[in-house]
Length: 111
View (cartoon, one colour):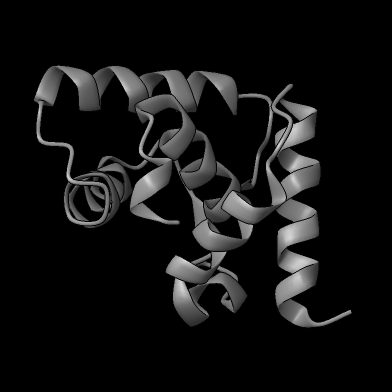
């Protein structure tokens, strides 16, 4: 199994732990969109307790990649994602972003 496949598998497992059944094609597209950062320990994780980190998630992924600009929608979906993943200490960026894509209905942006 390649490193990429390993990351996708772990992200699918993490999504399963929070009750989300992942579409493998979309999950692979989300992982691919993150580039080599998915292999770096710190860059591959999301911290909901770090406001600067959440701002990067919003600016670099939700706004730039997904094209969502409505602040109310953004705040709501980020809070929902943080709540959904609250039981997981090390939130994988790929899994977290997958959840955001699905919640925002932006699958076509990564297809």
